[in-house]
Image (cartoon, rainbow, N blue to C red; front, side):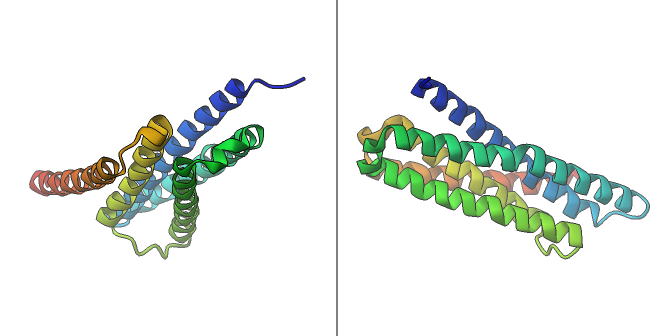
Length: 181
């Protein structure tokens, strides 16, 4: 029995969406953990302990399995259709995927550091770190959808435009948050 490539593609997309959802949420939990450390006891201990439990469950039950299955179904599609490996857009997409995998495992390191109580990231730094996953998502989706029709000049400008917009939005959020305290 041969599985239709569209089924494999659909499963790949489902697990990529799940993977990104986990990556976006885990960093939010890191931010909350770092902000909880600034609270007074007993609130501090209660929140930090609960957030660590949430991080572990999210990481090991959703995010990491989704990453593994995304990679498996992605490789399966390449095995079925190896011609994709000759296309320049696929090389660039796979480069972004490698960076996304590095991002994933660095998030795991941050989680381990939080559990040990040695994470030195500030909440504002983690907010910026969170936006890096957004940039990977934008780059990968545009590459896959536009493939060889993508004008690289506009693509590069758009990528940096999104990055700049995210940084401006974070700074505005920071100012609004500071005023509300």
